[in-house]
Image (cartoon, rainbow, N blue to C red; front, top):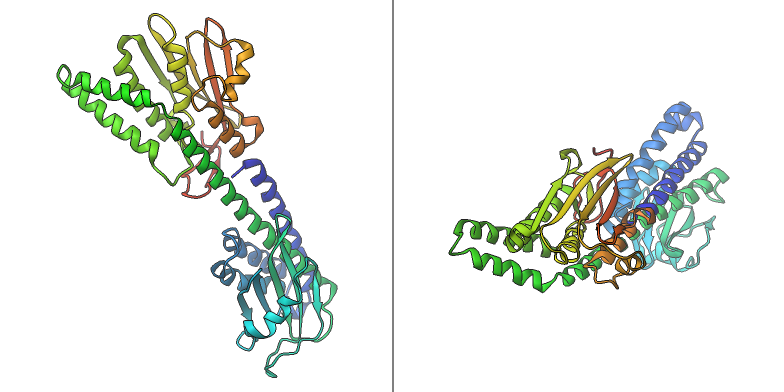
Length: 405
């Protein structure tokens, strides 16, 4: 997920939680209802926090069923219902047995297809025993579109009090923000997967041919080395084409780079020297999958291959403030200043550089764009900077902690 969007939405959610808790406390602060003000505030905060794990997974029957009991406790309503744009997903509280989706709820939803707060001061149910006498319906707005409805039911007739209305509005805003977070995360994941598939499609068939040729050339003269190369090639391709993760740890990327370097050194022999300097403390930092190896491949193909004698490629990682900086340098021919923009744009023959740059900016923000530093005749350095965030990347989305190294 785009880190900048995620941070902004996260701050917004925190503000909404605070506003909702404050509104809920004002709504239920009467001593006979909540005991001490401190107890009321603590109860409201706990209920608000308990809804978040459900809602950040999106709006579905399962997440709505998990969230509605906590929403009811937070809002102090007689019953709470959550609906998407098609049907009621869940209802919790008194009267839920008497309220049928085809009866009262469906009529309410049919009358509230716009994006305004609706107050129903008098409910008429087909079941005279139903305790629900009034309701407030608040739209759930996700990415400027109505995604569902929050319905708060009360046992008293008439218009709910201003504090009660404020609670409903704040709760709807909190639900909308959490659902939007899940939508953004899903969109970013789909984009990252598409970009990763595009990068895999760019992997040079010449590299695959040359790697296999190096293995074949060693089979008789150096059978043990050929065996190791074959294992590296199998692991390289397995990592390359595996599905399911758009983000990995830096350690996994470096292992992939080491396999790639071993395969290339088998081809170039003494003409290629690769050094890798990565502090152990940075190996848990989260990076986009397949973001480092393309930088090294560019250094080999556009640096080492185009010079006489031994070419050198170095991969170094250092912690810089709150970020981790990775530099891939070669001592090749370099790039003219006027061509640097073309290389990053993907028009200068750079293998996957534009793809890596796009994924870095999409994930972490514009200030984390890939940088290319080059001096004609002296070499080129690709600089990849990522936030110092560590954790085990989940199959979908990220689980990060700050300050990995």
